[in-house]
Every structure is written in structure tokens, then in C-alpha cells.
Image (cartoon, rainbow, N blue to C red; front, side, top):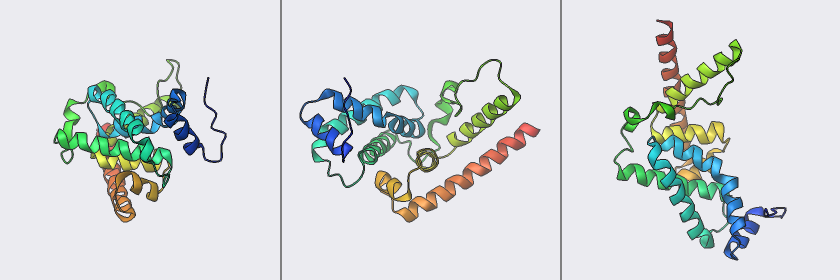
Length: 199
């Protein structure tokens, strides 16, 4: 039986239910935020074998700290903050934060086209979109973990500079500056890829 969130403050309602022992309410929180968490972990951590453990660790932290949630931001933003900090701790522990890190260890299966699987009878347009998505994905992989995450939060999750600042702990001005650098690097990587394709 699913938990209804038809309430003036659905975040508070769900949290209250969890704190009262309702396991289904926490399952609803996971369902509502798992796409965001998965996107962030995927962008920040290249080693596929570590991602599942990190996601589990993130939700253990969420559950353990719900009592202290102060509703100063959306629940999803708070969970995004936990996700970001957990991934940063992982990168620091593995000494991967500032290097171009483990792209050389990324398996080919980790390069997932944004458009997802395409049928075998796909049209020329679908083939073009698939190829373009794969080129974009490859270019994204060349960015630093933090830059990849900022691009994902802003362009795919459509978060504001303020929300991204809350999640990352960065001032809004820094978020804007990092996004500018990330987009510039992404553009350069894409142009380089297209040049290679033309050779």
C-alpha cells in the first residue's frame, strides 16, 4: 500500500511517517529521490562496482539523520547534499578528487547514451541522435567529477544556482563560474570529437 503525499507539506508528512515507524513512507522517499541520487553518483564516481555501495550508504545516512532535518530546503535538495558530500568523501579517500581520475578504468558499458536503447529498425534521425548522445556522454566523462555534477544538476535536473549551492556548499558565484568553465571545456571536447570524426 503506497503512502499518500496529498498534504500541504508532503516532505514533512513523509518524514513524520518515517519517524513513526512507517517503512513504506521511507520507500516513497527513496522512490522520489533515487533518480537524482543515481545521476549524481554516476557523474561523480566512475567505478561501477562502488556506486551501489555508495547509494546504500547515502540512504542509510538519510534515514539516520531524518530526525535532524530542519525543512530549510526541500527534502530532495537535502538528500542531494548528502549524496554530494558522500561522493566527495569517497573521492578524497581514493585520492581521485582533483585528478582526471579513473577514466582509464571506466568500462565501456559505463558510457550510457542519454537517449537509452534504440530499436534495431531505427531511422537515420534516431541513429544520429544516438551517436550525438554518445559523443556528449564521452565528452562529459572528460570533465572533473564536480564539473560533471554541476552540469547534470543545472541542465538535467533543472536546479537553480541556489539549490546547487545548497547541495555542494559552494557560493552561487562559484557555481556560476564552475558551470561556465564546465560548459567551455565540454564545448572544446565536443569540437575535438567532431574534428576526429571528420578525419
